[in-house]
Amino acid sequence: MRIARFDSDRIGLISDARILDVTDLLAESLPAAPASLARRLVAHFDAVAPLLQRASEQRTTAEGLPLESVRLLAPVPDPPKIVAAPVNYRDHQEEMNEAHHISALGFFLKSPSSLLDPEGTVRLPYTDRRFDHEGEFALIVGRSASHIEPGRALDHIFGFTGLMDITMRGGEDRSTRKSFDTFTPLGPWIVTPEELGSPADVDLELKVNGRLRQKANTRDLIWSAARFLAYASSVTVLHPGDVVTTGTPAGVAPIEDGDTVELTIARIGTLRVEVSAEGAVPCPTSGAARGPVPPPARR
Ligand code: MN
Image (tube, rainbow, N blue to C red; front, side):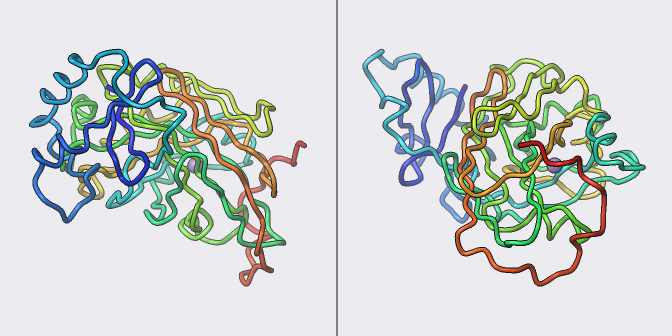
């Protein structure tokens, strides 16, 4: 299944470039708030999956809206947390001149309020700092769990999506450099595990203004999605709707005002955003010349 959030917080199933609105069906079947409808869907998916399956099978080819006629939204608007992998591809470790990778660094957290919808605009806050794209393969946690056994980790995944971990370079803490509002584009939708197949063999590529900047396959991850998820759960209990992102490969480079950034993940789709520096001001912190040394800018 391909599950999208769109327009005014609607939920839809995507097939054949059309989106079938299942919002009313879900609203009747899921417990009432407080969480978003998307997060309640994730938490209670086993209960509503047969309904969705039936709706999908009974759909006639003319039913549903053309995908290009809707405005896609970040597939989960209110993740309890965003868990992210630092330095989880060797080629990225080399380009950043980093002495350590994930097995020494563990994970870091991004602010959930840094999420951005597909086709949204990344807003660069400062005039005098470097900001980079990081294209990543991410997963959405399906059930509450702690201390997951690595061999069972995939059972805890609701689905997969694309994520851009937009990053300010420098010496400030990662949680600062990566948590500015709009710094976590997410989408374009969620693909469930039975539709994606193995998360250990997924191609991803990122382009800026049509030029290829990053290209990788998840088989090159130092810690696989499953191993990283199991590890994260040994530190902090994971909840339905948590976003876990697996790290970026080599090719990180600056983004600037007016850029278009596209992350394409095989068997998922393309997440596209714009970049704006409108309203940027001088940076009030002094980490610019500290921290890992990023690769030189390639324009
Ligand atoms: Mn990253």
